Length: 490
Ligand SMILES: *Cc1c(COP(=O)(O)O)cnc(C)c1O
Image 1 (cartoon, helix red, strand yellow):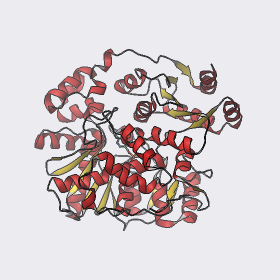
Image 2: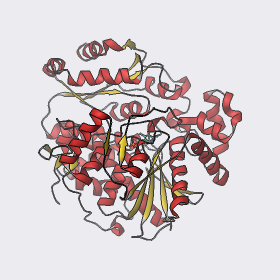
Image 3: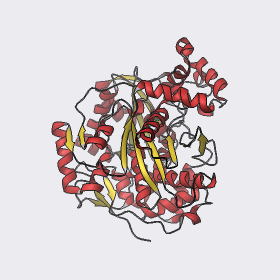
């Protein structure tokens, strides 16, 4: 097997082994790590067809994380993809109203971040051991809702790691807040901030770059790290489910082995879709990726005009995890398409002017988007055709896929990537189906959704309203640094 080296997107000379890249998260010059070349499968699709999710994960991950032993990888994979997921398939494909849907929401937080954040803690701990890191890792995360909970679930009770999550006290949904404040695990710490998400995020960033604090805590045996989506340890595990989806479609008789498919992904930070692109580079037969955006359609504009421009109004939509104007992982695609030198200039231009130009309009990733009305209509349409209830993010993808098909006449068998359970966005989902739900309280809505969808309320959120609140701390945003110091050294 070929050793894979990781190089920076802004400078080829920033190199790292896989485990070093996982520990570092980001290059010193602000660039992201990409594999120097894409590994090719050492088995045919046919040979992979009957593997369990865990064995398939091993076949993919061993090609990327080449400084991990088989024993280490299997330990990480088996620890992550176990009964925390509510189905042994881990990422099942279902066929509804003429499309295949890849469900990535069967983990503990009922959204797709679990796919990577359930394995990242294992990869990080193993990387620390391999590199002789003798300090306790402290994960600091600012969250607007989903990432914080998925990181907490992943890192809870992992030895040698502590996790501290800051969230805006008045800026997350009732379910999201309860998910975080009822978190168990002696190594977890959840803190409400009097301020918005940006306040929490900037405070955390200042801590990362505070050299004096870093030194002081290092002497006490701590080192900071991040569970952010630009870590290669979050990207690579996501490649697995694209293979899994394809092989399931073959089994279901939707396609023949070797036949090409189209893939539609509801996109925010560009991590999920990029993992699919990696799968294609490794030989998965994908014709076209449809990159689906909501009304914050920076990516749609980029893929249709060649101009990326974040200077525009920010829209708050019913698919909040896609409300993003800077898609960090796109930098990796830019580098694969145009090289380090060009990428460095593009990123400088993004920092200075908020925009850049690069023409990828003729490539195999096409942009599409859905308005709020189209998204709501897609939920209603799918429900009426099949009784299946889409979450708001997946509905953006479904609406975008239908628009793509109408415009291009491309009838290639397709899979839509579903990133969240409808239970996470109960109100918006139900109101799309019938306005009568507008005045019903949140927790009664869960019962209503159970009734009309026939899908049980997922165990992780069942009865969440009566669980014990374990984290009650709320602090002013300007004392975050002191809080972290006290918490670690008390
Ligand atoms: C994070 C998230 C997305 C966006 O994924 P990216 O990898 O950032 O493009 C889409 N849907 C849901 C529900 C998410 O949590």
